[in-house]
Image 1 (spheres, rainbow, N blue to C red):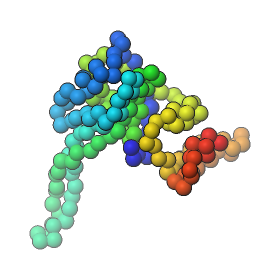
Image 2 (image 1 turned 180 degrees about the vertical axis):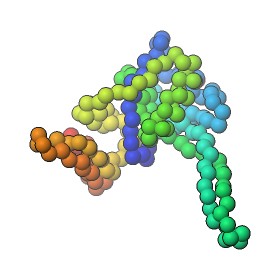
Image 3 (image 1 turned 90 degrees about the vertical axis):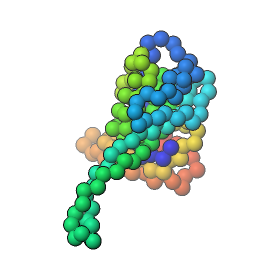
Image 4 (image 1 turned 90 degrees about the horizontal axis):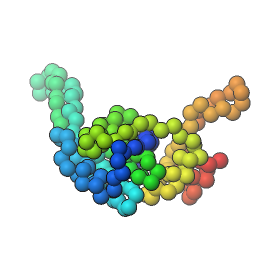
Length: 172
C-alpha cells in the first residue's frame, strides 16, 4: 500500500451484510473499464484494490516532423482500500479523487444500499487503528497546523523511515 495519503470514511449499510456477500457484489463487473480485486479477507474485514482506466492526453514534440503532436493513451491505475465491518470504516490509500472513485464504485456495486461519509478523526484513535493494520511501512508523516503556543503554529515533516517503532514517535 504505497501511498502518500490515507483517507478514512464511515460506512453504514442499510441492512446487515457479511464480508462474503460484499465480496460477491464487489467482484461482479460493476462499471465499465473498472475492476475490484480482493486481496485478503476474514470474518470482519477485507483488503482490495480498485483498478480503473483513465485517458491521458499530452502534447509532445515530434523531431521528425518538427512540430508538436497531441497524444492520447489509455492507462490503468490502481488504488488500495480496506473495509472493516467491525469498526464500520473504509480507508483509501490515495488522494481524494481516487477515494471518490472508490466510493462511487462501492455504492454502485452494493446497489446504493450503503452510506459512505467522511470521518473526523482523533489522531490517537487513528494511530491505534493503523497499528492494527498489517503491512504498513511509515516513511514520512506530515503534520499541519500544529499549535506550539497560542500564537505559534507550525507545519512539519517527520522522516520515520529508519525508525523501528514509528508509531511510538507519532504518538509523542
